[in-house]
Image (cartoon, rainbow, N blue to C red; front, side, top):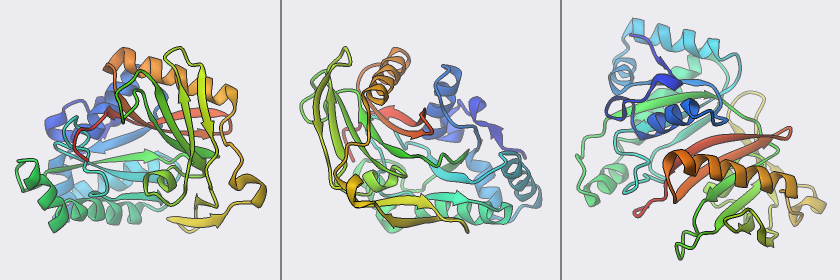
Length: 270
């Protein structure tokens, strides 16, 4: 039993929605970090301590040659009707092959909590979760955040971007007031509103993340330049050409390079 290269994890019924979306993004030539995916049976084999499953997980982790992010890809997750936002954990900055096993188990465990099961019940989904896992080389960004390719409040044809220093989890988890930008359908800037970004999540040398204080002069400084906004607009256009209108993207800039970390339909139920 071996993990699948992320680009081959197309079967949503086995690998989950997040892995399948990232696989399609890679096949479309979008800038997704490299990685691999475990299908639901492989995750259960890791949980059961299956020797071959554990071995191949460690070997493929070593093959990524650097710190990784371990993310849930449950069946039904990241669909238009269910995001599972805040339900399933993401383990960032995994640095050792033994720790990747623990990270996969933590992701699986998060899908079996009572709150995650209750969320499934409210959506009329099978209460017993089936969990795939994505393991990707982790980007250590200068800034990161989210982008909605349509305005999530009124559905207008406007890109809405939120950004902060460091890892984008600070935006997703509400740890800062991020910068807010609006672009029209042609990429023209409609709005720039500086946030209060007093902390940044960074990779810790021993693994995991640490909150760092942001320099005073950067707390209220805009973290996206005109060139970066243009790159984000171009990414939105490319994603919508493959996946249709109304997308929820997570992105990161590292040394001037833009990476796509997630591409899913904007969700009716959060």
